[in-house]
Length: 336
Image (cartoon, rainbow, N blue to C red; front, side, top):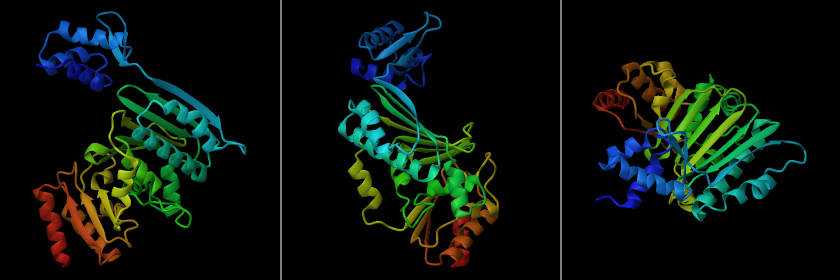
């Protein structure tokens, strides 16, 4: 027997993905009647947690936002992103639990500081959208896109390689003044982070530590979308401790990002895209999630060039199938 709380929680957690068929999805999940599910839905509506739109046949539902606030601000000589954060943004987030509020405060400040330091933007836009279930923060500017900035600063071959560098972490275009830890930290604080710039979309899904890249319609400037559940138990200090305590010179590289259009992972050029800025690392870990097959030339180049750039580095790989294991092990054994 399913409790009222379980059914209502399922509706709230799945409503965004099932606005038009949440009743059907709930019936399938719990095996109870349509009338019973509608009773719980009407309760959520009366509690002011869900909004209903349209008539019976075309009805759809959405979570009622507790916060829905946005603003566009011109960056002038008098502009202060600290004042904007303290006086405009944070007062709208006071309804959040302390741990989620702390995560949002740190992350918004980090993104805004990077925008001021590097984007050369004349305008910043932000949107705050909070429901009982999740928090969405969108920060956008009209400056030079982050991928293009990284590409030019690090003298990389193309924007796609710049996106890979961001996914690897520890990337900075100004090593004399920045350690490159801010964006890496923000990425690990949220459930999902999406970065759109220069026609590329780079996303990180925290629950399964998975990176994806796709084409984006966003061309001018950079748009960063941060998402976290309102009941998240993640804490700022614990993430800091995990990322920075006993800091090892280690990175994990998502191999799937070398594919720009779902093509096979088989060429030496693809391998080379992954191996920028590894000379000072102690250990490297190639993540083969979403990769079913690699070519022998790719495996050979991945291992050979890694060792050429850093002969003392320790090479590991994860999320690999038997074929990938055979080719990677063969490449490592040939060099040892």
